[in-house]
Length: 314
Image 1: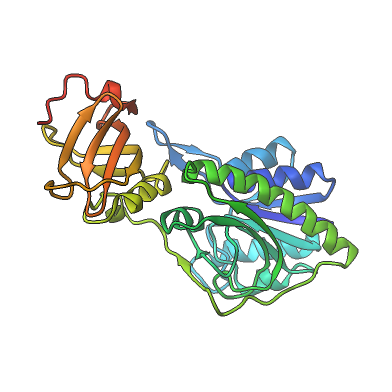
Image 2: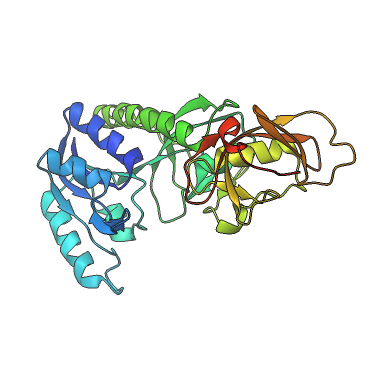
């Protein structure tokens, strides 16, 4: 297959590498413009761009793709280049730009998206984090035929993956990225053989995975311990969760915790109950949250045994 690839982060890079290893022709890659990163805020290429350049593939980085928008000149140049290449299909994975109709209809077989959920559940921007936060017991990859809606296109292939209580958004992301890379190869093989079957999404069970908001990072101990433990895993590594601890002037980040199914007795939600070298118990509205890994501002992540040294909370 003659494949144009559009993607930006590591999740997409694994798919691009798999497509190349499978022997498909990739004449062009689209990715987000280089962004400032690190302490020096130097421009840094995306993982997908690094991969494409390592394989000597042409890279385009348009700021926008609308032919009537602010970046119409860039969009027109991209359209002309894509039309000249006559791709069989475009594969899209965490690209970061909305694809207008001219992009969706240009390849012979349209655009296939690698989406990190079992559609129609968790359409939108943060399906991995929202699945953990909601307490879902499974997720997966959906290869979808893209249309003009938000993750509303026909499903072409689905692969399931269980969510364990040890999963963070980071670890689940990595497993889904591997699964997505395998799934897109299977889908491309079926597409080439003419055996890929499209199934419309059900209108039942639709949920939306909104972007993560900063105000969600502060732990609300009026929630139960189980819900808070899920939130901590869902927001690890980005953006992380925070809370105030007595004796400290700034919020600390909470990187790991687990729920203890015991009543908090007379303690108010958010109140520190016990401090040990293996955990800090905090009362919640339902149960106890035991903190096991934390980080002070300007410091490194620390297991609780190190964190509590020199701290006088009570």
